[in-house]
Amino acid sequence: MKLSLFKYSTFYGIMFAIVTVIVIFTAVQDRRISLKDEMLDTESAFDSGWHNKNGSEVNISKLLKAEGVTPYVEYSIFNTLPQDIRDAEVIFFRSKNIFYSVYIDGNLVYEPDVPESIFYNDSFGTRWNIIELSAEDSGKDIEIRFMTVYNSGRACVDNIYIGSSGGLILDTISQKLVSFITCVLILFVGVLLIVADIPINFRTQKNHELLYLGLFSVDVAIWCIVETNLFQLFFADSRLLQTISCTSLMFLSAPIVLYLDSVFGFRTKWLTNGICILSVIEFIVCWTLHLLGIADIHQTLFMSHILMMTSAALMLYSITRYLFRKRKVRFGSATIYIFLKAIGFFALAFSTVVDVLRYYDGDPTDTAMFVRIGVLIFIICFGISSLERTINAVKIGVQTELVNRLAYHDGLTGVGNRTAFEERLASLEKIKDDVPAVGIIMFDVNDLKFVNDNLGHHFGDDMLIKSADIICESFEPLGAECFRIGGDEFAVLFRGDNMQEVYENGIEKFAEGVRQHNDMPEKRFRISIAHGFAAYSKEIRGSKLLDIYQQADKKMYENKKEMKSVQSRPEEYYRDMMPAVLS
Image (cartoon, rainbow, N blue to C red):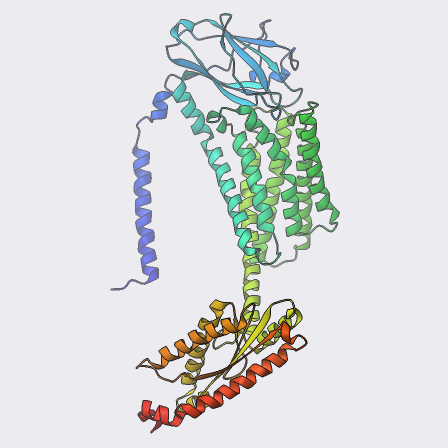
């Protein structure tokens, strides 16, 4: 018994629902401790109790606000290790924008080894650090000597824990895994949008919404991935990652403004060009200052932030103006896309403003936390809208291509029609003296009227299709173009060297194709095609291709008379072949 698609879909849905319930029920019933929980059983936070040499408490997550802290001046904070430290335990912590070293009981136990390069910022960036401990370190004094690098921004030592290194690393990964996966998803969508734009705009310059949105998404994803600080666990060069993070911000403004202009169209076109030019100028200025040692690219981040805030303002302006213009649109699919765009823009603009403000407030947590969420909402909302518009554009392009095909191709045989032949002949006329030679072959299918009148037009159509196939298969591999220019007439155009040789090779294959068809015992009709050839070359300079065309046509009619004189008449041939039909 054959199941209908609806019935099978119903059964499939029921089976999937049953399995889902089983999985959820089983997972809820499981009360066992995970491997991560077992490894973290002895973990303890060590972020409180830090103080300066005067005994004043220090907020290590905001070191720039600590009393007496000045960039490039060494400062120390102190604490006492727990009394129950076991062998193989470690201190695990994150440092940001500071130079530092760690001492236990006055002895240096840790100092980061970082690479140097002219392209790196002054600070170490964001680093995860592990300091091995032993039971003998229990109750000892620990000191972190550090120097902050910048007057503004975030400088901190946070996420300090004591426990097993494996468990602490696993816990850090699990905490940041969702953020990392979100970034990878944004990156994947961005690449997908860029790739989708290539075939859509390959032939003609159309709307590049998907390209601009894809470039913006990829750039945001790169920045957000670095800012999750998860990469720093697997990549030793934290300074390079900070350079990537700062540089990626320089590229954010241009693609989003280009996208805004592509979607909405700014009334003043200088606005788009202005933002793009400013983005280029910013890149040149920032890197010039960096390489000259005047200010590194972290110190010039405010330029990127200004452009980002400007772009956010343009987003809000664009969507507000768009909604105001569309306020009278009736509810429907168009209204849904309007709301999607509004939600996407407001989410992105709001998240951008929030994260920039968090940065200048010195918030030590993930800088891209809100932007990541806003971008994801934005991409989903606008990706759907842009994809819908692009699909419509593709449909229009397909329809246009279909109209062009109908205008220049014969509907029965699929070869070029008379219009295409005449335009091609006219274009060759203009360049005929710039090419070695131009050849024209005329063909005429014999017996077509007899077959149509006595066997039926479907037999005649099949005869024409088969004739076109034989002609095209014989000459197109040689670089020729085939056309049907009348009811039973075909033409072949080609250019190049050795016209006579090309013609003879093609005619030899053509004659073989005709013979193979006529030798088939199950054939329904005879193929008989007259032909004539003429060529234009520099030896007859001054002649027109129309004259060559008429010469080939004249030779074709001469060949037609010759063929009729030697082959049996159609009445006799088809009476012997199909007596029942012609009786």
